[in-house]
Length: 348
DNA sequence: AAGCCAAGCAACCGCCGACAA
DNA sequence: TTTGTCGGCGGTTGCTTGGCT
Image (tube, rainbow, N blue to C red):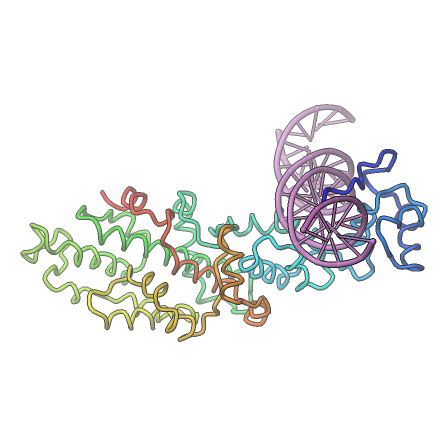
């Protein structure tokens, strides 16, 4: 079971391959096949270890390797597959003909990881980021989100960015709502105004009123912001309507969910997590068009992958990287959703 | 022109599971 | 059942290149 000595054998060459060595390796494999990699170097007249030969062949010299820039479609596919499979580069590579696991891994580390970070998505969990950097970029993200309706639907790069922005906004709303539901301090109107949409502001303010109407000074129907405290529903431009206006089917699915929740006693947005997590038999994903993907935090992706029987081919057919992130949003129940953090930002 | 720095990528390292003896 | 070998994988290193000062 021990590690094979392979490259530790002294006198064997390491480092970059010369064109002559490449020729020798290609020539031998063309004539004889690689056979035993361990035996190959001697038979081919190479002063390399078998492992080095195998790596050079599989990552560089193989005739079916596709070289050059990754296409937009390939990028999307890698992101989608990574959200399900995690760092299983070899499995990801099986879905990209002509690309090697090493190439995909390098491309992920040098390009895609940064790209996701810039879009406010955590490249490890594929969840929207909730740190201060994201909040600092909020106006930019919101602007991108507002542009989404005007965009060419086939422009994948812009669409992905806009989806990420939408998700960031939704996640922010979710977190803000939780804070408002648990605090009596008045909300920070400057921050609320950054959300830019009257229905959203109404929704958040009414969440605040709903949760605080039992306290002194509000119970008499007066509120410093001039809103109707005794009947907050009169103020409410419902969030369901807001998300229903989104063209993306995912937001339609959310609106449907909210509608169902509204029919339940004591429902509010924070119920969404419980609803989603506790009722897989009538899940959002099955009732609507959101693919049943799993989030891919390092600690959970493997287990989820096997338990939920997610087929990476489904990712390819639906080709939706945002669904994964959307579902991740529904599962926000960890430290990233910590009330304390949001209270610091939101409450005066 | 020279030096510095960061990005990109080929190659290596070390671990693991499968399998045969 | 144990042990050794092999191939495969993911993480990491270090060289090359290009941009900037």
